Length: 359
Image 1 (cartoon, one colour):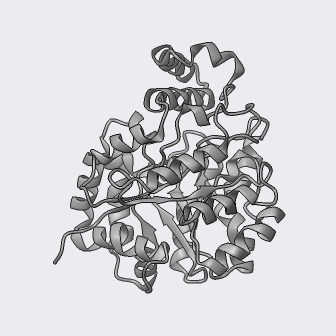
Image 2 (spheres, rainbow, N blue to C red; image 1 turned 120 degrees about the vertical axis):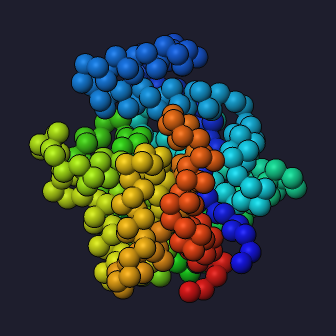
């Protein structure tokens, strides 16, 4: 059997030039060049129980440890060191311009153009599969989105509803999804209670925008659209599933667990265009991989349907804050799942999701 050509379906290359200067807090601007101090502040926030602030500070430290570089090229060189030479990477840009944190030093158009040039690089760009991104508040007619796709041949679209918009936003339903469906372009979307959140967006509303059920109107209107819910529900919901002892009694993830919802939505067979990836979540390897192995190796029809809709992804470079390296997680996952299942989620399923192969 030939060796596996891995497709990592969830990689980021955006730099701190693409992050608003006031993210996550205006008063942190003087500390942006002091990641050690930011890490200390995150630890302090966690000790006093301010976990949302601690998470934002940790992510800020990550942005500036890994993204303090003028070009996406340097980050691509870094991630490639963790994978075989023939690995392909789905690269997902980010637009935070409408999230309430002020402008980014470099606008989205230039981020798209740099990614397009990088994907055409005869040496370093090999295997790069670039996606375009859109926030419908910043690009209501989707002009920049389709410019990037048409000019650079981008292969799909990434959205991040937790920044402050619903997946079935009328502008997306009118200007984005119909044409994506006609062209056969896949959609990657953030689906986790964590991550970057719009500055003035309450947690309850952010969760509603990110809830797996929020995609039902989109799937009903566009049944041929291939939608990947990133992170398989996210860490909070995996943690609640693995340990049902309620450390946070009122937390919604115990009653409406997104990981369970995604498994049921895919396994039930009602939504054949629905996919998920395991990015970031599986970096808590020892806690979660035994459950993932059971989910992906079952013999029931719903297990087979789920197995056919899971994609390998890592969420590099956000995963750099975890103890295990990118390479270590990839090898451990391959060993835990076995060659057949790993080949399916890392090579065969991505080819179908990307529109390169038929089922």
